[in-house]
Length: 128
Length: 108
Image (cartoon, rainbow over the protein chains, first blue to last red):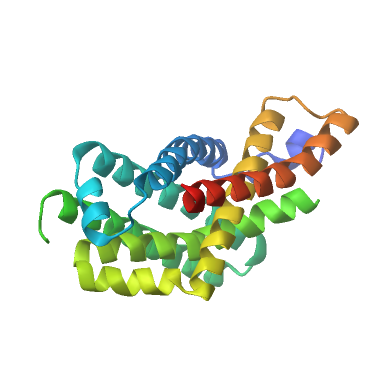
């Protein structure tokens, strides 16, 4: 670490070099969320009947099932990135931060998997 | 300042409560009519409706401040008047969207 120019003082302290990637993916998933949430909200308005058979029939069709799986993926990915920033902003002790990020990964990947499996189970006709 | 706090608060609320409700909905759909009836009676109750309306408000608020971020990201909208105008307009537009969404759901 130098003590000369401003770039010299920070050179080598290094970021993880993943900041730009995190920032970009946060925005890519945000676009996905806007598009797919618009689809979901319009679908809900047009649905009218929120009974089990009607909603299950709708969601087991190929297009709604695909869109819902993509929505679950995009939402959970976006939420994982957002909650990571929350953790990094408020937890400063390395061990606590590591544990929180690890727990976040388990919950978001587990939750996303559960959502995708539920849609797939409907689409492939496990129930009804 | 307020928009920034709202963006984080609504985002975290959606991530924790919103995704929970989404998973409950999808899981109940896949589990069958009985589980789905439990979900429906919970969401149809007064506290359930408050949660759903709150989530829709949080979604539209987060979406509007997020779209505002997109504009700022491309380097536009930093003039003081413009910036101030959109920081006030974003949460107001979100409330209008929330009202319009529930009007569309309930009045059709």
